[in-house]
Amino acid sequence: MDVRDTETILAATEDTYGGVTVDMKEKMDSNPFATSLTASMQLWKQQGKKGVWLKLPIELSDLVDVAKKEGFVYHHAEETYVMMVYWIPKTPSTLPANASHQVGIGAFVINDEGEILVVQEKYGKFGGTGLWKMPTGVVKEGEDISDCAVREVKEETGIDAEFVEFLAFRQNHKLLFSKSDLFFVCKLKPLSSTITKQDTEITDAKWMKIEEYMEQPFVKESESFSSVAEICNMAARKDDAYSGFIANPKTKKRPGAKSYLYCNKIR
Amino acid sequence: MDVRDTETILAATEDTYGGVTVDMKEKMDSNPFATSLTASMQLWKQQGKKGVWLKLPIELSDLVDVAKKEGFVYHHAEETYVMMVYWIPKTPSTLPANASHQVGIGAFVINDEGEILVVQEKYGKFGGTGLWKMPTGVVKEGEDISDCAVREVKEETGIDAEFVEFLAFRQNHKLLFSKSDLFFVCKLKPLSSTITKQDTEITDAKWMKIEEYMEQPFVKESESFSSVAEICNMAARKDDAYSGFIANPKTKKRPGAKSYLYCNKIR
Image (cartoon, rainbow over all chains, first blue to last red; front, top):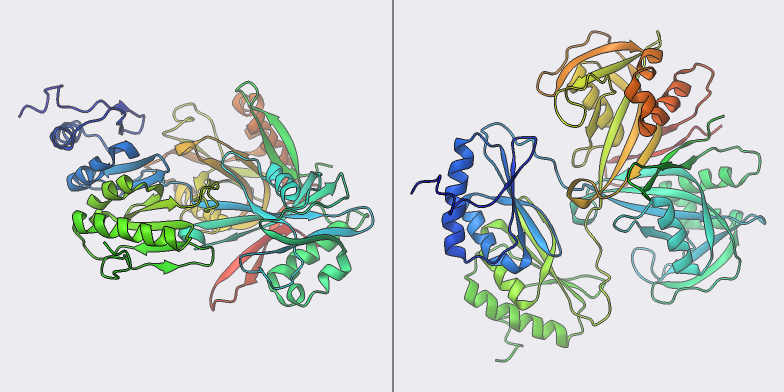
């Protein structure tokens, strides 16, 4: 077979790193796909290509096995597709890894009376323990971390709040799906006071004196909870005893797009 | 067929959220797998199960198509396996998403003479532009962000350095593989001065007066670069004009495990 017969070579786009990407959008039977993939790989090897990316929509899941037999491995997957990859050089792969971190928030919402917003959870590690804790949650795809804190507070307690600053963050490894986790403690200012708790995940919600929060046995005994509580307690003072990272909105080049640079107040 | 015939039900572990996980480790032909999967799904639906997780190692890539025909979709994939999932309830899925963020660093390494460590890159956006920039890099799987900064500086320039503090961070969306990105600007203290630049990615590396760095046209014109440069310039002063987040090591319950709580200096 002449590998230069363009009929059998898969359509591919080139990137600036010496790689090619095949984005399979049309249905193709597995036998002609196998022939084309083998021919294409021969050509790309001759051309000195490095990484070959193969994106297969879930409708073409019968081609996954074909690609695996050709030597492809998985790179990542989302609900509707799997990305497979073949690194041609003998040297170690320099292909970029997929996302490595989950991002979560804990919301420290404190009112002018020194009361903080706390909840009891139905499920998970603290379900049924009676622990009063800050609302927490996970950043959704494409969501700003500061917006996530505002959203989670609203969802769990009905309280409107605005983001003030990041007080601290923590990185942990080997958590869900063996990925790492970044957890940001955010200070928020409440804009309303009447609690309407959410029923599916939350057993109860209330305003609690910060001293009472800190006196809970679990908070005192847990190194993690007590360290964060100590920082929150500092940040609750009105003498600027603690200074976190505020959100500086930056306009991006794309119209309508913005992003935040989070940093300390510049004095 | 009696779905309670345990011979045909796939071995599964239950979780506390009403879900089951099938971790396929043994080779199984696609026909008996299809029969077992259908019978298992019938049983789990009867039992009121919610999420069904199906982990398929790449050796069993021929079963991906079977699972898709049963109604499974992709959840995520790593080099050696794909995780598929089936959400049984009629209500929206509450299954946790996979990792959503890449994490990167920029290293602001400044010596006692007010010189910062800068490099010119071969590839990527700044390749061949003549821009002197800070060393940057991506956090590897399981790596602490502060360690990543130290490693990247060493790899790109040969300079030994120690982490001092985070100066700022920025979140961007819809980048590589449509994931979000968190970029942390880290201040480091150099422990050596002789540069040995890395050849594969770096064209040149040197110590440069911070004023000269800031005077580069690209740095002045880019909102992103100029904001970060301004913060770095503050952090370069010796009067504590700027205060970042330092690393507080915390001992974890697992022996030998540690993690950091990053926060402002507590005064």
